[in-house]
Length: 340
View (cartoon, rainbow, N blue to C red):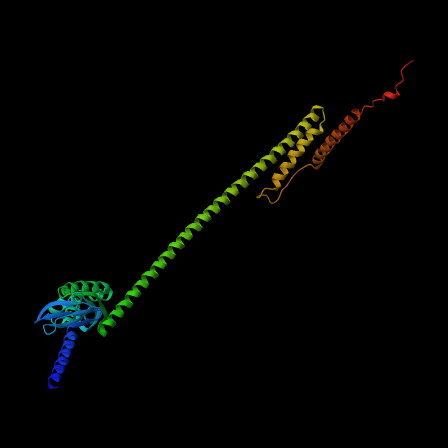
């Protein structure tokens, strides 16, 4: 009985030991993680995500590293710019382990090394720039920091994905000074815009005045043209009236001449009376004559007018006689009898 009990105990211990050894040799690595394995203190291999086996009592997992992208806050720190302005700056770093062996054995404290390297380069990069450049060129600062820190951490099996400056805080007195400077700059731009608007308005007003002057000149030109055309038309009509008057005068002269040729003395009285009346009209229309003494013979005037009426009567009588002579009576053919 004692021997059987001892054998059973030995088998139980052996099975328990075997189970413990199997459990120690099996390693399950979760997704996004990598384990480094050491044998007698020396790195041998890296366990990838999934089921892995090691030699128990000989191999051991030294470090468990996350291969996922991680975020690290950069605490606020004071930076002196190139123009001696004191500011406070903080940020954030995005990084990822791409080689677990190098990350485990090339640097002692990975996160502390990245943090200190980032803070040092922030002071270096931002200290070489002016305050206005820091406030207006944040993207340029981020790219420059990313390039510098990524090159420095590359031997550590790290990849710096992004570095972002979160906040830049100048001192209060500097903020007030910047506010006054901004206000002065805006006032300057407003004055420039106002002056430009006035200049543009004066230009437009001058153009409008020039256009109005051109239109006035064009209107005056058209008025002068119309006035000249009116004078030409008036002169043409005056000439036509004078021509008709001359024709009437010539016809009257011809009729009087024919009357004189026939021996009618009253025709001469017509001319004398006409000239007499014209002379009286000129004397009466003179501006410097206020009183006119005319030693004239009224009977001569009446005689001349009587001669004119005699001429008109004679012409009328001759016209009636000519019309009577022109009337010729022609007998009808039916009233004429031929001799048988």
